[in-house]
Image 1: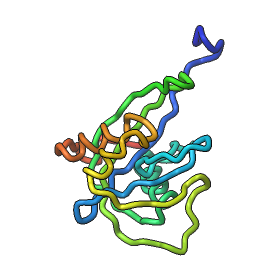
Image 2: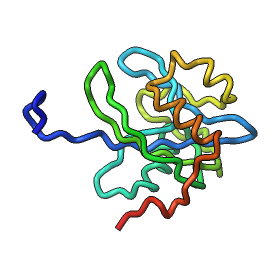
Image 3: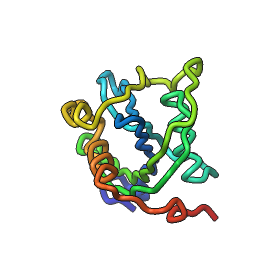
Image 4: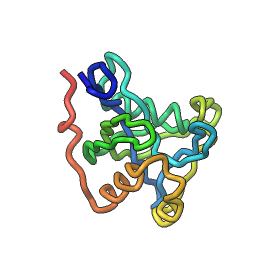
Length: 153
């Protein structure tokens, strides 16, 4: 049990996808508590869902893009200072396959953008969390594991 909350501790498990096309990164602008922030297409793992399926689903729901995962960047742990909530982010790389502009985006998503790495980095104060740039930096540095490193049994 968590001594602070009086209940069992459990991190929020999330997936995120770094999608690169012509040197640009697919990011979402979203409203979080009345504040506009930037993030990778990302979201929570749902019950009975494979991790890789969650990454593809979240990307489609938040951007209207169908993607093909190409690699596993890594697992990242972060605690939000404002709330004390802990997050475990599983990050992937992907390539865009098809855009579905008619598809409505998830609630809270304002729009998707294609930004250069420099544009995204320059907008660091708008990032939803430090995970946004860290995952992109690791991706740009070539950090990759095969998708087989993530298994669903």
